[in-house]
Length: 266
Image (tube, rainbow, N blue to C red; front, top):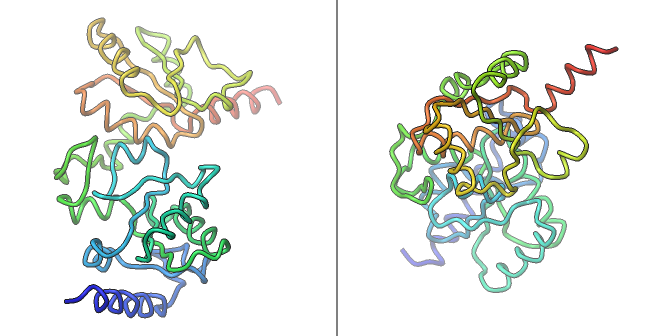
């Protein structure tokens, strides 16, 4: 089939998917962003060689797990629109934005931002990276390796098994532990917990490996917290890849710690 024909098929697909009732419980953001066209998981797979796929998450999330061949342009980049305009100037194919999953809004915000900058043919793939990796492991990359094994994807239960409530985290951290703060520097200003080592942001796995090796050698727990408990889920892939067993995260991150302090002294 000729490329032009594929492109028209793609446009027809968009017209169809965009005409589906937007108020879908599975895709709650469709009702919030009615002007944003979207493409389904299977349709994106079929069209993957005729579109430009852009991952709008952080570089650490992207480097951990992404769609094979996708470009990484974080939505938070100051020059986000300039970079997208550069792509559009060189290539007329549709640009597909994606992020983590059905509740993630970054991909929708990316499309809206591009539309407002008059960049044409921008679409959201809103099923997210996990659905893609589970169904198309050969077209996914995990920690620089492809294809991946679906069993390598960390389940919600496995993630939760390493989460500790604030009091439990503090209790275990007071034992033989190495404590790591992976917050952004601006989130650390004047707000410290324990005597924590700070990991450079964007996260640096090589720096992190020093503490992993130390924890293994000295038989110590690795206790890690971020700002609100979301970044640690991506960090878990590297910890598992390094075969570390005794590691724990603070549920809700530093925010939960300081919220408890405020409530205690009201």
